[in-house]
Length: 209
Ligand SMILES: [Cu+2]
Image 1 (cartoon, rainbow, N blue to C red):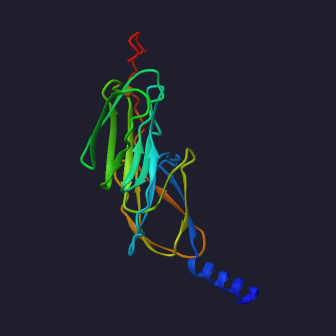
Image 2: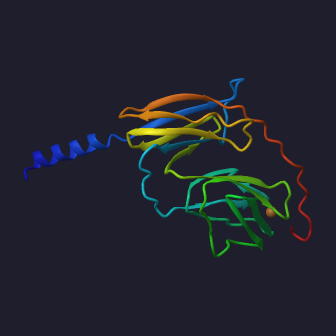
Image 3: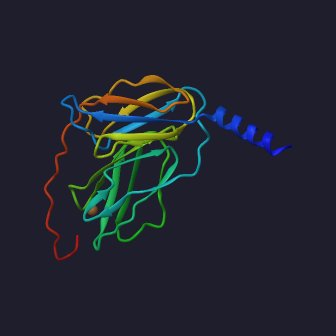
């Protein structure tokens, strides 16, 4: 095989893959950028085989970090406690019911998020702590930044169901099918999202709860 042939074959295989990017900007009806929205592309045909995935949601300064996490079904999530006090993380959501009882440091076992759906997290000790996990059946997803932008990279060409989700959405925008081709695509999405209301925090007491 000559070098020239090799390069030609490599070029052809790149062309056949033609992975592309989708950039989305999410804003409210009033035109304000929406942070923490999930942008999800579900392949209409042929979901790629699952791969082992790991994520982390920390407990830091008596809050969850980050506020929103998007993972693929089957992902193992660690809940490291970075505070010098104990947390007690739980969820009553049907997509994942669990609790990690009063603990410090990093629990030995991660929690496996094995069902698609939305999971609301709380802490038994600190009532104001809240965070969300969206579990999706696809490897193609992204979360919007403070500027309301999400970038989905390396998406293979094909037809996808595009859906949006936000923990404080007033209504989930209807999902619709789009075609991802060989070229980068951009689109705008409007989502009506309520402002975040922070529950009052208690001062740290001497018992370090
Ligand atoms: Cu806590």
